[in-house]
Amino acid sequence: MTGQATKVVALCGGVGGAKLAYGLSRLLADGELAIVVNTGDDFEHLGLHISPDIDSVTYALAELDDPERGWGRRGESWRFMEALGELGGETWFQLGDLDLATHIERTRRLAAGESLSSVTEGLCRKLGVRARILPMSDASVRTVVESDQGSLAFQHYFVRERCAPRIRGLHFEGAETAQPTAAVLEALSSDALTAVVICPSNPYLSVDPMLAVPDLRQAVAAAEAPVVAVTPIVGGRAIKGPADKIMRELGHAPSPLTVAQHYGALIDGFVADVRDASGTDAGAYPTPVTFADTIMKGPAERKRLAWEVMCFAESLRSPA
Amino acid sequence: MTGQATKVVALCGGVGGAKLAYGLSRLLADGELAIVVNTGDDFEHLGLHISPDIDSVTYALAELDDPERGWGRRGESWRFMEALGELGGETWFQLGDLDLATHIERTRRLAAGESLSSVTEGLCRKLGVRARILPMSDASVRTVVESDQGSLAFQHYFVRERCAPRIRGLHFEGAETAQPTAAVLEALSSDALTAVVICPSNPYLSVDPMLAVPDLRQAVAAAEAPVVAVTPIVGGRAIKGPADKIMRELGHAPSPLTVAQHYGALIDGFVADVRDASGTDAGAYPTPVTFADTIMKGPAERKRLAWEVMCFAESLRSPA
Image (cartoon, rainbow over all chains, first blue to last red; front, side):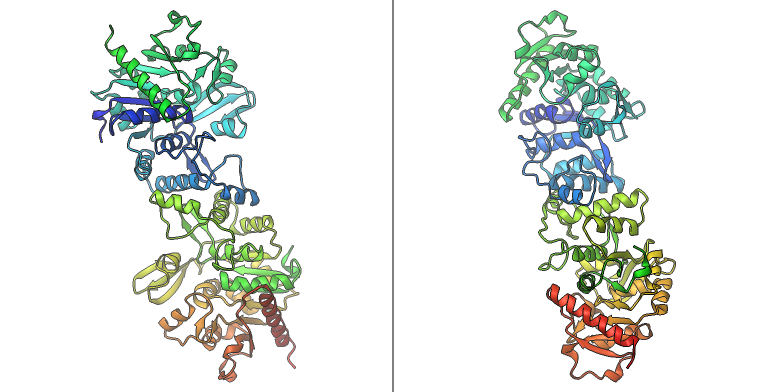
C-alpha cells in the first residue's frame, strides 16, 4: 500500500476521534484511508513506551475496544495491576493484562531499532487492521501542560491528576524539530485525496500536538482536498474528556464556534452537531458549516457520520 | 537485620532448593536465616530483568508458589501471554500476569539505579518474606551452556530448547570478576553460624554459578560452621530437572556420590536419600554422609528435612 491511492486522511486523537476513524474505515477500501495519529501523549511508564492514542485507534479499528469503559481492550482483566499494587508499584495508570502485551511488544521492537511507524504497522497487521494508522512522527513530541500546579507531563495531568489542575497553556516538546513521517506526507499529497478530516478529538490536547509539527501543519494546509473538522463540543460540553473545561480555563466559551475559530484558516468546512443548529449564526464561522448527529453511540452511527463528513467535503470540492 | 545473628546460610537455586529453604525458614527466627540465591540464570527478556531463582525462592517463602506446576505463582493466569502471542511476540518463556508484575517492578527499580539486592529486599518485604533472600552478587553473572548445538544462553538451553542439547561444558560469564554482596559475606562470617546448607539444587546449573564467584567460594570454605550439601539425585534420577542428564553428558554416573565428589573438599557432610542407603559405600564419600527422605512433597516434609539437615550439621560441629 502506498499513499498514492489515499482518498481520505483523518487526523485523530484517542477515543473520540477513533470512533469517526472507525466509521471511515468501514466506508473506504483498504489503502484509501490514512489515519494520522497524535503521539504527543505518548510516554514512558514502568519502562514501557505507551502510545495511548495509537492504541485507542488500533483497538477501535480492530473492534477490540471496550465500548463500555471507553478506553483499552474489551474483555480486559487487571491481574497484573493488582499484583503490581501488592508489590508497591505505581498503579495510577491502569494497564490491563491484554493491553500490556501491546506495550511490551512495542517497547521491545523500538529498543531493537524499529521506528514507531514500523512497529505500529506490524501490530496493526497482526490485529487485522487494514487502514493505515500512521504516527504523526517517529520523533518524540511530548505534550506538557502548564497549570496552576506547575508544568505537568501530559499523562500526569490527564490520568494521574484527572484533569483537575487549571490549564494556563500547553506546549509540545520536540514538535518544532519533529518531522512528519514520509507516509504521512505522502498520504496528504495523494492525487486521489478527497478529504482531510480533523476528527472530533480534543483540539488542544489531541490535534494541536499534530499541528505543532511545522511540516505536518503545512502539508495539511497545502492538501488539495477540503479540510473538514468535526466538533467535539455539543451543547456546550465535550462529548468526552476535558475539552470544555480547558476552553473555559483558556478564556473561551466552550462551543463549536470556538473550535472552528481555533482551527481558523486551516479548515475549509466545519461539522457542528444538530443539537447546536438552532441559534447558530452560520455567518460567524470562518468556513461553511453543516450540522450532523456527531454523538456516535454504535458502529452504525460511526459509519453514518463518516458518510456525512465525506459528503460535506465532496460538496466543498464542487461548489454549486 | 544484620548478618550478625545469622545461624544458617542456605545456598539455593530455584524450585528444588526453594523447598528446603522454605523448610528452614519455618524453623528459624527472623534474621537467623540467610538464603544466598543463584543469579546465573537471570536474563533480559522482552526488556525485562528476570531473576528466575530469586523469584522461585521468594514465591516459595511467601507461600505464593504453585505446588502443582512447580514454578511461578499459584492462581496464575496467562492473558498477557495469549495477547502477546496474537501480536507475534516471543512466547517461549511463559510469563504469567501476576509474575509479570515482579519483573516489571524489578526492572523499573534497577533502571532507577537500585541494586538487585535492594530490589529483592523491597519485594520480599512487600510479600511478607522475613528470611533474607540475598542475590549472590549485584554484578551480572550469566551461565552459558556449551552444547552440541553451540553456546547457548542459559534460558535458551533450559526453557526454549527444553534441555535437549547435549552439554559439553558450562561457563559463567562475569563470575571471575563478580563480588558477592556485603550481606552475603556478612552472613557467611556470622559468629552465630551453625550450618551452611547447599540445597538440593542442580550442582552444575544452580550451585556452580555461585561457587564460580571466587570470594563467595572462599567465604563458604572459610565459614566456621559445617557445610552440608543435600542430594538432588535420588535413585539415579534428578528429583526435578536435568541434573541426571547433565551428569551423564559430562561423563559421570548420576548418583549422590557424584554430587558429593563434585563438591569435594568444600563440604563437611552430605545428605543422601534413604532410598539410596542400601548399597551405599559410605567410605567412598569424601565426607560423613547421612540419609534422609529428601523428597519434599509438602510443607511438613520441607520442615522435617530442614530439621534433619540442621541436626546433621550440629552433629558435625560436636563430634562424638
